[in-house]
Amino acid sequence: MRVRVHLRSPGRVDGVVRDIVDGRWAEPEGIAEQTLGEKSIALPGLVDSHAHFAAPIGKDWQSDDYEEAVGRARQAVLAGVLLALDKGWSNLHTIRLIEEVAPHLRPEVEAAGIINAVEGGYWPDFARELTSATFEEGIRRSADEGKGWVKLIGDWPRRGQGPVVNFDEDQLRRAVELASESGSKVAIHTMAREAPSLAVEAGVHSIEHGLFLSRNDLGPLGERAGMWVPTIIRTEAVVQQLGPESSGGKLLLEGLENVRELMPEAAEAGVNLLAGTDVTVGAHDVALEASRMVEYGLPVPLALRAVSWDGYTATGRSTGYEPGEEANAVLFPNDPLDDISVLRHPELVIRAGRVIS
Image 1 (cartoon, rainbow, N blue to C red):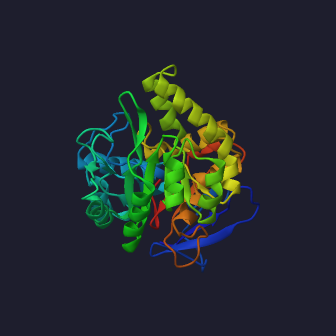
Image 2 (cartoon, rainbow, N blue to C red):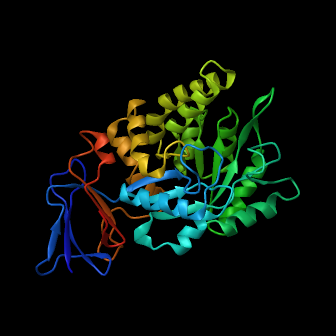
Image 3 (cartoon, rainbow, N blue to C red):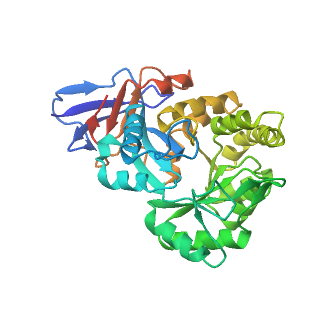
């Protein structure tokens, strides 16, 4: 059956019309048997740039079985999330679902394998713990097992010390070199003051959380079109867990104020500012993170980019519905530039050439 789709971007009066032929976009030809989207607004898909499909939602640092991970990936597609950057876990469930689950039943996924830390530098018995002697072997193994990413825990709180950096700049630089040899990128968890600047200087590709990025970091990160995923909802949840009046809570609140100030400047500097859920809400709710970014003062057009187009361009993907490309799109009843909350309510999802909702 030939399906014809009207694809009009937010803020635009006109758009493009494409047919779906053998799962790919094609120039309109002849009479279509079904026409969709004539009054809709289209995006190439929502993007969760800090997903964890292997993580049970709201249950920190636990692991579900494989089928639960598959279910979360399916739930994400139904919500319009068509690309996810999964930043690793204690198992390889996400790697397996990329290999086994049909494309129309999950987002397109890039993923890290098992997370890397050091002894005492993360939750016990969760991550691969690297030493100076095993560091290079561990990074190579991570690059081999992952699907495009290596994940490092850049800092972690120690009792009586607060957040402590796990890796020095030379190690981070070497991790980038080793990962790049196999075409992988490096993402790093950073909530301490020192870690983001070390990571930027070392050339790390994606700064996760990055509460204490500095203005001096934005230029170098933007020049190489690096990524920053603030994960506001997740950080707020950690503040509540620690208590806003605790030393850790106060530190994170200070970091969130820094995030509020720097997000617009980061986008202006060329940083790929991206929306990510982490483990507090699932990938299917990444639209909530985009709304939270707006509440933190990020202009709606920038938040919309953060949860859609920029996730594609940051990872080298097209967003233009060009003929011959896989047919992916999410259609909405209203323009998210007028009300970004509409992103939570797609009226139609097209994934891998199939109309799935």
